[in-house]
Image 1: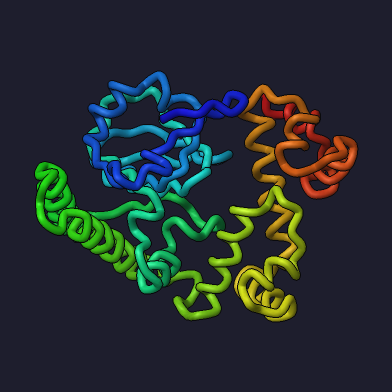
Image 2 (image 1 turned 90 degrees about the vertical axis):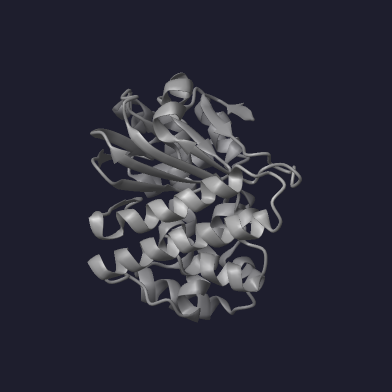
Length: 294
């Protein structure tokens, strides 16, 4: 399903239809050839995406950054991120799509998902370059996923799919931690930080105060400030500001909405206040930013 917002296309995977597939697996080359007109233009989706480029060379754009694609590049695109492929349709590999509800069914799975650095840390690169030491292990899990998907009536199918996907992510997280120690320790405080980031991503257009976010998390504002300061050296309000500015920049770059419309979409009733807010935090006015990237 596709929903067009300005000129940023939004893709959904059976959203609000729990009886339909919540996880799909594609051959990358076939998918790109079939959907080239859509994949090469900026778009976003309400589901999570893993793209494993097993062969091919090029670039992949995620938000405002270009990342090199080479053999065994694995990209993790979180929901709502804007990204697009280059025009190369000769890539070989796999693409996995899944809704958050597919992976998260109980509190232990919420904890697992928050401990994974891949989708829940907007302050790190979305790409992981693997080597042959893990390639075959990941291939084995993908083969198991494909076998389960091929049998629609298999007993316990969804549970096994979820288990193989989690195993795939765990092996990747282990590999990544060996190559580069995790930026954050995977303890309760870090999980609280990631919960806050996720809440901001969900509510940033509603004008919630830091105190209101803290209450949603059953924390004091002071404790929340200590957490964001410890891990990111930023205040909670700064993270809200950065999320608003990121979305404004996405819409200025990728949509044809005018500045007033963008302000309204982001929760600003007064267009002039939106302009002042953007200039204060981005250093230039919205119109100057749009001209600089056009």
